[in-house]
Image (cartoon, rainbow, N blue to C red; front, side, top):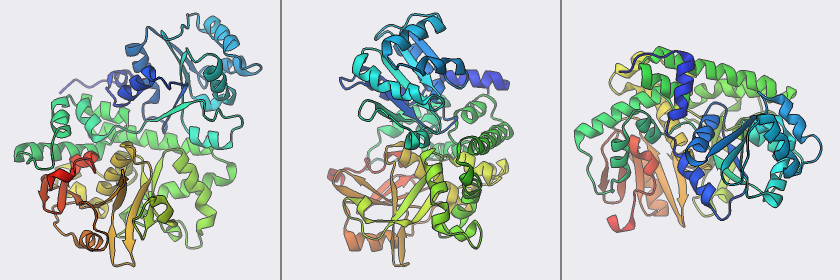
Length: 455
Protein backbone atom coordinates (compact mmCIF):
# COMPACT_ATOMS: atom_id res chain seq x y z
CA UNK A 1 0.00 0.00 0.00
CA UNK A 2 1.28 3.46 -0.87
CA UNK A 3 2.10 5.99 1.78
CA UNK A 4 -0.63 8.42 2.70
CA UNK A 5 -0.60 11.72 0.86
CA UNK A 6 -2.05 15.02 1.97
CA UNK A 7 -5.04 16.68 0.28
CA UNK A 8 -2.99 18.75 -2.17
CA UNK A 9 -1.01 15.75 -3.36
CA UNK A 10 -4.19 13.74 -3.84
CA UNK A 11 -5.54 16.49 -6.10
CA UNK A 12 -2.31 16.52 -8.08
CA UNK A 13 -2.36 12.77 -8.62
CA UNK A 14 -5.85 12.97 -10.17
CA UNK A 15 -4.11 14.39 -13.22
CA UNK A 16 -2.54 11.00 -13.92
CA UNK A 17 -5.71 8.94 -13.66
CA UNK A 18 -6.58 7.28 -16.93
CA UNK A 19 -10.16 7.94 -18.06
CA UNK A 20 -12.16 6.42 -20.90
CA UNK A 21 -12.99 9.93 -22.08
CA UNK A 22 -9.46 10.21 -23.52
CA UNK A 23 -10.22 7.86 -26.41
CA UNK A 24 -13.38 9.85 -27.21
CA UNK A 25 -11.42 13.09 -27.12
CA UNK A 26 -8.85 11.62 -29.49
CA UNK A 27 -11.67 10.64 -31.86
CA UNK A 28 -12.92 14.22 -31.68
CA UNK A 29 -9.45 15.57 -32.46
CA UNK A 30 -9.12 13.54 -35.66
CA UNK A 31 -12.76 13.64 -36.77
CA UNK A 32 -13.66 15.19 -40.12
CA UNK A 33 -16.72 16.57 -38.30
CA UNK A 34 -14.69 18.23 -35.57
CA UNK A 35 -16.20 21.44 -34.23
CA UNK A 36 -15.61 23.22 -30.91
CA UNK A 37 -16.44 20.68 -28.21
CA UNK A 38 -18.58 21.12 -25.11
CA UNK A 39 -17.70 18.70 -22.30
CA UNK A 40 -20.64 18.38 -19.92
CA UNK A 41 -20.67 16.87 -16.46
CA UNK A 42 -21.45 17.45 -12.82
CA UNK A 43 -19.04 19.36 -10.65
CA UNK A 44 -15.99 17.39 -9.44
CA UNK A 45 -16.29 14.47 -11.86
CA UNK A 46 -12.86 15.39 -13.25
CA UNK A 47 -13.57 17.51 -16.33
CA UNK A 48 -10.69 19.95 -15.80
CA UNK A 49 -8.15 17.25 -15.01
CA UNK A 50 -9.24 15.11 -17.96
CA UNK A 51 -8.95 18.00 -20.42
CA UNK A 52 -5.57 19.17 -19.19
CA UNK A 53 -4.21 15.62 -19.22
CA UNK A 54 -5.57 15.10 -22.73
CA UNK A 55 -3.99 18.37 -23.84
CA UNK A 56 -0.59 17.37 -22.51
CA UNK A 57 -0.78 13.97 -24.21
CA UNK A 58 -2.27 14.92 -27.57
CA UNK A 59 -0.99 18.46 -28.24
CA UNK A 60 2.24 20.41 -28.13
CA UNK A 61 0.73 22.97 -25.77
CA UNK A 62 -2.39 23.83 -23.75
CA UNK A 63 -3.90 27.31 -23.46
CA UNK A 64 -6.16 27.23 -20.42
CA UNK A 65 -8.73 29.81 -19.33
CA UNK A 66 -10.89 29.31 -16.23
CA UNK A 67 -13.57 32.00 -16.16
CA UNK A 68 -14.22 31.58 -12.43
CA UNK A 69 -10.56 31.75 -11.44
CA UNK A 70 -9.70 34.37 -14.10
CA UNK A 71 -12.75 36.66 -14.19
CA UNK A 72 -10.76 39.39 -15.90
CA UNK A 73 -10.69 37.17 -19.02
CA UNK A 74 -14.46 37.67 -19.35
CA UNK A 75 -13.75 41.19 -20.63
CA UNK A 76 -12.19 39.72 -23.79
CA UNK A 77 -15.67 38.54 -24.81
CA UNK A 78 -17.63 41.70 -23.94
CA UNK A 79 -17.66 43.33 -27.37
CA UNK A 80 -16.89 41.58 -30.62
CA UNK A 81 -16.80 37.78 -30.65
CA UNK A 82 -14.43 37.61 -33.60
CA UNK A 83 -12.03 34.64 -33.10
CA UNK A 84 -9.16 36.80 -34.39
CA UNK A 85 -9.70 39.45 -31.72
CA UNK A 86 -10.25 36.87 -28.97
CA UNK A 87 -7.14 34.89 -29.88
CA UNK A 88 -5.01 38.03 -30.05
CA UNK A 89 -6.15 39.05 -26.54
CA UNK A 90 -5.65 35.54 -25.12
CA UNK A 91 -2.13 35.27 -26.52
CA UNK A 92 -1.18 38.50 -24.80
CA UNK A 93 -2.99 37.58 -21.57
CA UNK A 94 -1.53 34.07 -21.31
CA UNK A 95 1.84 35.08 -22.75
CA UNK A 96 1.91 32.04 -25.00
CA UNK A 97 1.35 31.04 -28.59
CA UNK A 98 -1.97 29.51 -29.64
CA UNK A 99 -1.42 27.60 -32.87
CA UNK A 100 -3.98 25.75 -35.02
CA UNK A 101 -3.86 22.00 -34.45
CA UNK A 102 -0.89 22.27 -32.08
CA UNK A 103 -2.47 24.04 -29.10
CA UNK A 104 -5.54 22.81 -27.24
CA UNK A 105 -7.56 25.86 -26.17
CA UNK A 106 -9.71 25.19 -23.08
CA UNK A 107 -12.52 27.44 -21.86
CA UNK A 108 -13.24 26.08 -18.38
CA UNK A 109 -16.23 26.99 -16.18
CA UNK A 110 -17.65 28.52 -19.35
CA UNK A 111 -21.04 29.01 -17.70
CA UNK A 112 -19.47 32.04 -15.96
CA UNK A 113 -19.02 33.72 -19.36
CA UNK A 114 -22.05 33.21 -21.64
CA UNK A 115 -20.40 35.25 -24.40
CA UNK A 116 -17.50 32.76 -24.47
CA UNK A 117 -20.06 30.03 -25.01
CA UNK A 118 -21.65 32.03 -27.80
CA UNK A 119 -18.23 32.61 -29.38
CA UNK A 120 -17.99 28.90 -30.21
CA UNK A 121 -20.28 29.55 -33.18
CA UNK A 122 -17.76 31.96 -34.67
CA UNK A 123 -14.82 29.69 -33.95
CA UNK A 124 -16.67 26.97 -35.86
CA UNK A 125 -17.50 29.22 -38.80
CA UNK A 126 -14.37 31.34 -39.03
CA UNK A 127 -11.53 29.54 -37.22
CA UNK A 128 -12.32 25.83 -36.99
CA UNK A 129 -8.65 25.03 -37.55
CA UNK A 130 -8.20 25.88 -33.84
CA UNK A 131 -8.94 23.02 -31.44
CA UNK A 132 -11.24 24.37 -28.72
CA UNK A 133 -13.02 22.63 -25.84
CA UNK A 134 -15.42 24.34 -23.42
CA UNK A 135 -16.32 22.73 -20.11
CA UNK A 136 -18.54 23.72 -17.26
CA UNK A 137 -20.59 22.52 -14.35
CA UNK A 138 -24.35 23.13 -14.38
CA UNK A 139 -23.90 23.82 -18.09
CA UNK A 140 -27.22 22.24 -19.06
CA UNK A 141 -29.07 24.68 -16.84
CA UNK A 142 -27.22 27.67 -18.20
CA UNK A 143 -27.82 26.55 -21.78
CA UNK A 144 -31.53 26.20 -21.14
CA UNK A 145 -31.81 29.88 -20.29
CA UNK A 146 -29.03 31.24 -22.47
CA UNK A 147 -29.34 33.29 -25.62
CA UNK A 148 -27.44 32.86 -28.84
CA UNK A 149 -26.30 29.30 -28.12
CA UNK A 150 -24.35 27.97 -31.12
CA UNK A 151 -26.88 25.33 -32.24
CA UNK A 152 -25.30 22.98 -34.77
CA UNK A 153 -21.89 24.58 -34.35
CA UNK A 154 -20.51 22.39 -31.54
CA UNK A 155 -19.87 18.75 -30.68
CA UNK A 156 -20.79 17.30 -27.27
CA UNK A 157 -19.26 14.81 -24.86
CA UNK A 158 -20.36 13.86 -21.35
CA UNK A 159 -18.17 12.94 -18.40
CA UNK A 160 -19.48 10.97 -15.43
CA UNK A 161 -17.88 9.58 -12.26
CA UNK A 162 -15.45 6.73 -12.87
CA UNK A 163 -17.15 3.51 -13.93
CA UNK A 164 -16.29 0.24 -12.24
CA UNK A 165 -13.94 -0.65 -15.11
CA UNK A 166 -12.20 2.73 -14.78
CA UNK A 167 -11.97 2.08 -11.03
CA UNK A 168 -10.13 -1.18 -11.76
CA UNK A 169 -7.63 0.69 -13.94
CA UNK A 170 -7.12 3.29 -11.22
CA UNK A 171 -6.16 0.41 -8.91
CA UNK A 172 -3.63 -0.87 -11.46
CA UNK A 173 -5.96 -3.72 -12.44
CA UNK A 174 -5.98 -3.05 -16.19
CA UNK A 175 -5.41 -6.78 -16.99
CA UNK A 176 -8.54 -7.65 -15.01
CA UNK A 177 -10.53 -5.06 -16.92
CA UNK A 178 -9.22 -6.38 -20.23
CA UNK A 179 -10.19 -9.92 -19.24
CA UNK A 180 -13.74 -8.84 -18.33
CA UNK A 181 -14.13 -6.86 -21.54
CA UNK A 182 -13.22 -9.89 -23.67
CA UNK A 183 -15.60 -12.36 -22.03
CA UNK A 184 -18.30 -14.08 -24.08
CA UNK A 185 -21.73 -15.08 -22.77
CA UNK A 186 -20.72 -18.74 -22.98
CA UNK A 187 -17.61 -18.25 -20.82
CA UNK A 188 -17.36 -19.22 -17.16
CA UNK A 189 -15.35 -16.96 -14.88
CA UNK A 190 -13.08 -19.00 -12.56
CA UNK A 191 -14.47 -18.79 -9.04
CA UNK A 192 -11.35 -17.16 -7.50
CA UNK A 193 -11.51 -14.37 -10.09
CA UNK A 194 -15.25 -14.06 -9.59
CA UNK A 195 -14.80 -13.57 -5.85
CA UNK A 196 -11.95 -11.13 -6.41
CA UNK A 197 -14.16 -9.01 -8.69
CA UNK A 198 -16.96 -9.06 -6.11
CA UNK A 199 -14.50 -7.74 -3.52
CA UNK A 200 -13.45 -4.94 -5.85
CA UNK A 201 -17.10 -4.15 -6.49
CA UNK A 202 -17.84 -3.97 -2.75
CA UNK A 203 -15.12 -1.37 -2.41
CA UNK A 204 -16.42 0.49 -5.45
CA UNK A 205 -19.93 0.65 -3.98
CA UNK A 206 -18.45 2.36 -0.93
CA UNK A 207 -15.88 4.57 -2.66
CA UNK A 208 -17.89 5.35 -5.78
CA UNK A 209 -16.40 7.03 -8.82
CA UNK A 210 -15.71 10.64 -7.82
CA UNK A 211 -12.04 11.05 -8.82
CA UNK A 212 -10.76 12.56 -5.59
CA UNK A 213 -12.39 9.81 -3.53
CA UNK A 214 -10.95 7.12 -5.82
CA UNK A 215 -7.44 8.56 -5.59
CA UNK A 216 -7.68 8.80 -1.81
CA UNK A 217 -8.72 5.15 -1.62
CA UNK A 218 -6.02 4.06 -4.07
CA UNK A 219 -3.25 5.86 -2.22
CA UNK A 220 -4.30 5.41 1.42
CA UNK A 221 -6.99 2.69 1.68
CA UNK A 222 -8.43 4.94 4.37
CA UNK A 223 -12.22 4.69 4.17
CA UNK A 224 -12.70 7.45 6.72
CA UNK A 225 -10.70 9.75 4.45
CA UNK A 226 -12.89 8.69 1.52
CA UNK A 227 -16.02 9.55 3.49
CA UNK A 228 -14.56 12.93 4.44
CA UNK A 229 -13.99 13.76 0.78
CA UNK A 230 -17.49 12.59 -0.15
CA UNK A 231 -19.02 14.78 2.54
CA UNK A 232 -17.02 17.75 1.23
CA UNK A 233 -18.37 17.12 -2.27
CA UNK A 234 -21.93 16.89 -0.95
CA UNK A 235 -21.46 20.15 0.96
CA UNK A 236 -20.15 21.79 -2.22
CA UNK A 237 -23.26 20.67 -4.10
CA UNK A 238 -25.48 22.28 -1.47
CA UNK A 239 -23.54 25.51 -1.89
CA UNK A 240 -24.00 25.22 -5.65
CA UNK A 241 -27.75 25.06 -5.17
CA UNK A 242 -27.65 28.37 -3.32
CA UNK A 243 -25.27 29.91 -5.85
CA UNK A 244 -26.76 28.80 -9.17
CA UNK A 245 -30.41 27.82 -8.66
CA UNK A 246 -33.31 30.25 -9.06
CA UNK A 247 -34.07 31.72 -5.65
CA UNK A 248 -37.61 30.35 -5.72
CA UNK A 249 -36.30 26.81 -6.27
CA UNK A 250 -33.40 26.53 -3.82
CA UNK A 251 -35.39 25.00 -0.96
CA UNK A 252 -37.29 22.66 -3.28
CA UNK A 253 -34.08 21.46 -4.94
CA UNK A 254 -32.54 20.86 -1.52
CA UNK A 255 -35.65 19.00 -0.34
CA UNK A 256 -35.63 16.70 -3.38
CA UNK A 257 -31.89 16.10 -3.06
CA UNK A 258 -32.01 15.20 0.61
CA UNK A 259 -34.96 12.79 0.27
CA UNK A 260 -33.33 10.65 -2.45
CA UNK A 261 -31.76 8.09 -0.06
CA UNK A 262 -35.14 7.56 1.60
CA UNK A 263 -36.89 7.25 -1.76
CA UNK A 264 -34.44 4.59 -2.93
CA UNK A 265 -34.62 2.66 0.33
CA UNK A 266 -38.34 2.01 -0.14
CA UNK A 267 -39.44 -1.38 -1.45
CA UNK A 268 -41.13 0.43 -4.31
CA UNK A 269 -38.57 2.98 -5.46
CA UNK A 270 -41.11 5.09 -7.34
CA UNK A 271 -40.55 8.74 -6.41
CA UNK A 272 -43.26 9.78 -3.93
CA UNK A 273 -43.65 13.52 -3.51
CA UNK A 274 -45.47 13.16 -0.20
CA UNK A 275 -42.18 11.82 1.21
CA UNK A 276 -40.88 15.39 0.98
CA UNK A 277 -43.86 16.63 2.97
CA UNK A 278 -47.46 15.37 3.18
CA UNK A 279 -48.84 18.28 1.15
CA UNK A 280 -46.22 18.19 -1.63
CA UNK A 281 -47.52 17.97 -5.20
CA UNK A 282 -45.67 16.91 -8.33
CA UNK A 283 -46.20 20.18 -10.19
CA UNK A 284 -44.55 22.08 -7.34
CA UNK A 285 -41.32 20.07 -7.66
CA UNK A 286 -41.08 19.43 -11.41
CA UNK A 287 -38.70 22.34 -11.92
CA UNK A 288 -36.49 21.27 -9.00
CA UNK A 289 -36.17 17.72 -10.35
CA UNK A 290 -35.42 19.02 -13.84
CA UNK A 291 -32.76 21.35 -12.40
CA UNK A 292 -30.98 18.44 -10.71
CA UNK A 293 -31.28 16.36 -13.88
CA UNK A 294 -29.81 19.13 -16.04
CA UNK A 295 -26.96 19.46 -13.56
CA UNK A 296 -26.21 15.72 -14.04
CA UNK A 297 -26.64 15.19 -10.30
CA UNK A 298 -29.52 12.73 -10.65
CA UNK A 299 -30.72 10.24 -13.27
CA UNK A 300 -34.44 9.70 -13.83
CA UNK A 301 -35.84 6.32 -14.84
CA UNK A 302 -39.36 6.59 -16.26
CA UNK A 303 -41.99 3.88 -16.07
CA UNK A 304 -43.33 2.18 -19.20
CA UNK A 305 -46.27 -0.21 -19.35
CA UNK A 306 -45.66 -1.30 -22.96
CA UNK A 307 -42.09 -1.97 -24.21
CA UNK A 308 -42.33 -0.84 -27.82
CA UNK A 309 -40.25 1.41 -30.06
CA UNK A 310 -39.73 4.29 -29.75
CA UNK A 311 -39.62 3.50 -26.07
CA UNK A 312 -39.78 7.17 -25.05
CA UNK A 313 -43.22 7.36 -26.59
CA UNK A 314 -44.56 4.79 -24.13
CA UNK A 315 -43.21 6.20 -20.86
CA UNK A 316 -45.34 7.75 -18.17
CA UNK A 317 -43.40 10.86 -17.19
CA UNK A 318 -45.42 11.17 -13.99
CA UNK A 319 -44.13 7.83 -12.68
CA UNK A 320 -40.38 7.60 -12.25
CA UNK A 321 -37.46 6.66 -10.01
CA UNK A 322 -34.56 8.95 -9.17
CA UNK A 323 -30.98 7.72 -8.85
CA UNK A 324 -27.96 9.64 -7.60
CA UNK A 325 -25.02 10.31 -9.92
CA UNK A 326 -22.69 8.23 -7.74
CA UNK A 327 -23.21 5.24 -5.43
CA UNK A 328 -20.40 6.40 -3.14
CA UNK A 329 -22.14 9.72 -2.57
CA UNK A 330 -25.39 7.83 -1.95
CA UNK A 331 -23.66 5.81 0.75
CA UNK A 332 -22.24 8.99 2.28
CA UNK A 333 -25.68 10.65 2.31
CA UNK A 334 -27.09 7.52 3.95
CA UNK A 335 -24.23 7.45 6.50
CA UNK A 336 -23.26 3.92 5.49
CA UNK A 337 -20.44 2.83 7.82
CA UNK A 338 -17.16 1.37 6.50
CA UNK A 339 -17.71 -1.66 8.73
CA UNK A 340 -20.35 -2.82 6.26
CA UNK A 341 -17.52 -3.81 3.91
CA UNK A 342 -16.43 -6.67 6.16
CA UNK A 343 -19.91 -8.11 6.76
CA UNK A 344 -19.95 -10.61 3.92
CA UNK A 345 -22.11 -9.42 1.05
CA UNK A 346 -24.46 -7.33 3.17
CA UNK A 347 -23.32 -4.15 1.41
CA UNK A 348 -25.25 -5.22 -1.67
CA UNK A 349 -28.50 -5.58 0.25
CA UNK A 350 -28.25 -2.36 2.27
CA UNK A 351 -31.33 -0.13 1.91
CA UNK A 352 -33.20 -3.07 0.31
CA UNK A 353 -30.63 -3.23 -2.49
CA UNK A 354 -30.85 0.49 -3.31
CA UNK A 355 -27.07 0.87 -3.49
CA UNK A 356 -26.85 -1.98 -5.98
CA UNK A 357 -29.62 -0.64 -8.21
CA UNK A 358 -28.09 2.85 -8.12
CA UNK A 359 -24.76 1.34 -9.19
CA UNK A 360 -26.42 -0.36 -12.16
CA UNK A 361 -28.18 2.87 -13.15
CA UNK A 362 -24.99 4.93 -13.16
CA UNK A 363 -23.09 2.24 -15.10
CA UNK A 364 -25.79 2.17 -17.77
CA UNK A 365 -25.89 5.97 -18.04
CA UNK A 366 -22.11 6.15 -18.41
CA UNK A 367 -22.39 3.65 -21.29
CA UNK A 368 -24.58 6.06 -23.27
CA UNK A 369 -27.96 4.93 -22.02
CA UNK A 370 -28.73 8.47 -20.84
CA UNK A 371 -32.48 7.77 -20.81
CA UNK A 372 -33.44 5.05 -18.35
CA UNK A 373 -36.73 3.16 -18.23
CA UNK A 374 -38.32 0.43 -16.16
CA UNK A 375 -41.36 -1.73 -16.82
CA UNK A 376 -44.32 -2.21 -14.53
CA UNK A 377 -47.48 -4.19 -15.21
CA UNK A 378 -50.56 -3.33 -13.14
CA UNK A 379 -48.71 -3.87 -9.85
CA UNK A 380 -48.19 -7.56 -10.72
CA UNK A 381 -44.64 -7.42 -11.97
CA UNK A 382 -41.77 -4.97 -12.36
CA UNK A 383 -38.51 -5.20 -14.31
CA UNK A 384 -35.82 -2.82 -13.05
CA UNK A 385 -34.43 -1.62 -16.39
CA UNK A 386 -35.61 -1.82 -19.99
CA UNK A 387 -33.14 -0.60 -22.59
CA UNK A 388 -32.97 -0.42 -26.36
CA UNK A 389 -30.11 -1.57 -28.56
CA UNK A 390 -30.65 -1.29 -32.28
CA UNK A 391 -34.13 -2.53 -33.05
CA UNK A 392 -34.36 -4.68 -29.91
CA UNK A 393 -35.60 -4.00 -26.39
CA UNK A 394 -33.79 -5.77 -23.55
CA UNK A 395 -35.21 -6.24 -20.03
CA UNK A 396 -32.85 -6.40 -17.04
CA UNK A 397 -33.69 -7.43 -13.51
CA UNK A 398 -31.27 -6.51 -10.70
CA UNK A 399 -30.79 -8.79 -7.71
CA UNK A 400 -28.79 -7.52 -4.75
CA UNK A 401 -27.69 -11.00 -3.67
CA UNK A 402 -27.69 -14.58 -4.91
CA UNK A 403 -31.43 -14.79 -5.53
CA UNK A 404 -32.49 -16.89 -8.52
CA UNK A 405 -36.04 -15.54 -8.46
CA UNK A 406 -37.21 -14.33 -11.86
CA UNK A 407 -41.00 -14.05 -11.62
CA UNK A 408 -41.18 -10.55 -13.13
CA UNK A 409 -38.76 -11.44 -15.89
CA UNK A 410 -40.77 -14.55 -16.68
CA UNK A 411 -44.01 -12.57 -16.92
CA UNK A 412 -42.28 -10.02 -19.17
CA UNK A 413 -40.78 -12.78 -21.34
CA UNK A 414 -44.07 -14.60 -21.82
CA UNK A 415 -45.84 -11.38 -22.73
CA UNK A 416 -43.30 -9.70 -25.04
CA UNK A 417 -40.81 -12.43 -26.07
CA UNK A 418 -37.61 -10.34 -26.11
CA UNK A 419 -34.39 -11.75 -27.65
CA UNK A 420 -33.05 -12.65 -24.18
CA UNK A 421 -33.94 -12.20 -20.52
CA UNK A 422 -31.13 -10.69 -18.45
CA UNK A 423 -30.48 -10.65 -14.73
CA UNK A 424 -27.70 -8.97 -12.75
CA UNK A 425 -26.72 -10.58 -9.46
CA UNK A 426 -23.79 -11.79 -7.38
CA UNK A 427 -23.86 -15.10 -9.22
CA UNK A 428 -21.27 -16.00 -11.83
CA UNK A 429 -21.67 -15.39 -15.53
CA UNK A 430 -24.07 -18.01 -16.86
CA UNK A 431 -26.36 -18.43 -19.81
CA UNK A 432 -29.16 -20.86 -19.15
CA UNK A 433 -31.22 -21.08 -22.30
CA UNK A 434 -33.33 -17.94 -22.52
CA UNK A 435 -31.79 -16.37 -19.38
CA UNK A 436 -28.39 -14.67 -19.18
CA UNK A 437 -27.00 -13.86 -15.74
CA UNK A 438 -24.56 -10.96 -15.58
CA UNK A 439 -22.35 -10.73 -12.51
CA UNK A 440 -22.99 -7.24 -11.14
CA UNK A 441 -19.42 -6.19 -11.85
CA UNK A 442 -19.97 -7.01 -15.54
CA UNK A 443 -23.13 -4.93 -15.98
CA UNK A 444 -21.44 -2.39 -18.26
CA UNK A 445 -21.40 -5.18 -20.86
CA UNK A 446 -25.23 -5.20 -20.90
CA UNK A 447 -26.80 -5.76 -23.37
CA UNK A 448 -23.87 -6.22 -25.77
CA UNK A 449 -22.59 -9.41 -24.12
CA UNK A 450 -25.55 -11.18 -25.66
CA UNK A 451 -25.11 -12.35 -29.24
CA UNK A 452 -27.95 -14.10 -31.12
CA UNK A 453 -25.58 -16.88 -32.25
CA UNK A 454 -24.80 -17.73 -28.60
CA UNK A 455 -28.26 -19.25 -28.06
